[in-house]
Length: 532
Picture 1 (cartoon, rainbow, N blue to C red):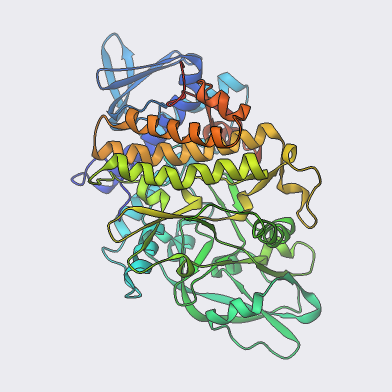
Picture 2 (picture 1 turned 90 degrees about the vertical axis):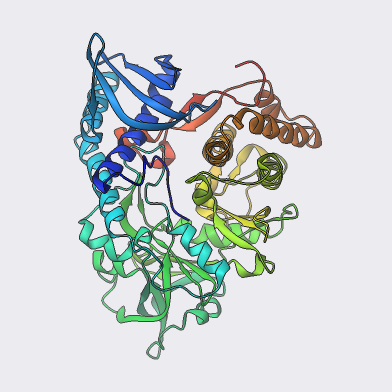
């Protein structure tokens, strides 16, 4: 499976393809976060036109597909009006400069990183397009596993609503060996940690056995780390020893820092002092302890048939100042226990990244939505558990006929508890896992509807033009059924009556250089409710 988000055509050279993809990502953010809320965008005749009101500039771009949420698919160059009917093409770098001027005037803030990050993201895509091997050089020979790894490593263009989706801090030469898009595989590096410096919980050593770890010296325990991290951050304590690379090969997933070991069917979520999109990808102590505590808590709460959680039952770190963020490691359970013969697990983001031709898209969509939507909404409204079910946090399992039969939710870092639905705080769960009701609603609505379902719906519509409104009516019917089952909760009643959905504003949070948790949200049109 190959990522084709914003891909303008196979005949174009890699520089051109990368620049168009980067420009479309910036434009999509601009439409969603600035022009659409301000009423400064018009769509018609196969073109979107938007005004930058603080810069006195007008932009336009052709649309390959118009979305009821404003999540349009763009085609061809972004253009700037020079005066009258004269238009000129603008590349991603110049477009980023125009956006920077607009945001400076709008917010009163400057950001000297922004244009460089957009250009660096574009240049990274150019490099990925040029260097990606035609085939996986290290397949397992197990079709379901190889298809899953391919889905994780296929996202060449990244998040379509982030201004710099493939920007990574550091020299590109430093990350080439670890880039999932280059179909990379490598071995973990291992540390030997003295017993009195080990902190952790859960069956870490039992799970680790499948990775074929090296034998530690007497009085030590092994700790797997990402080799890139070891190059960035030296061992956190003088008594910690390096054991070098060892064990079974691992494959970097779409998140870059989480590694999948097909032989062990185990995920290793490593700390990585690299900024990817908005955040440094490192594990704080509360994230380590929270993974195990939430695994235990969620194991006691029911999930509907066909939906399961990939648990994170163990962590290990060095019990020294700042060591958690350097080498805190979480182990996540694998895929095989959730698969039947003939099943294929695929990252949802990969399904959304390419036109999705299916024989009966409505029936296929009904099955997909019927698995995912009730599970996420009931977890939130009945149990107070917020699953951030965005495209990168869900693995869809398809049967031999390529029909959705199972959904696997993952990444407990994104799981939070809605404080308005918990009379007492559960023991062991860190306070950082709390969301107030407003944040809980925003995250559920954005991750489930705007990020995830809009992406899959758009992929189906790319293969079957014009079907998108019908698919959103199907979503509305499922939400109505869940609302009836839950006693008509006000949160769902408001959605069904047409209250706007919300989207995380990745452009604005990147401009402000805030933490992801502080990201603002913007309204987007409601595609399945009442009057907009």
